[in-house]
Image 1 (cartoon, one colour):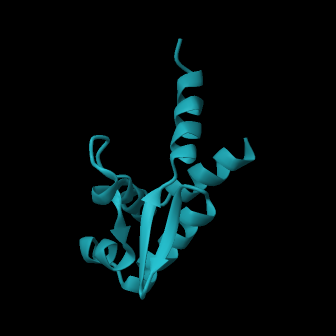
Image 2: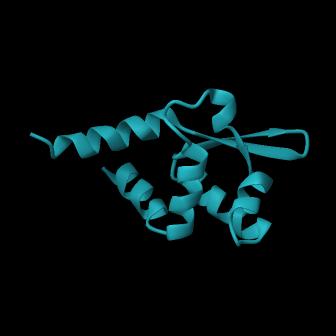
Length: 95
């Protein structure tokens, strides 16, 4: 349960939620389409690269995303285990 509290705390910031939604992408998108670099994310928002990088760090520490560095570029993708944990939590309230 503590892990979920960390996840929801990370998503409570409107900018982080928007960044996460962009990283998560559409459900029908291919893996290549879901992959986003931090610099590409920064171009989508009226935020500095360092601010977006900070938000990405918070999302990564919460376990919501994974980051991979290729050369000078860092790419982000959603962590499917985090999505599954959120789905299970939300599903518990359904009858």
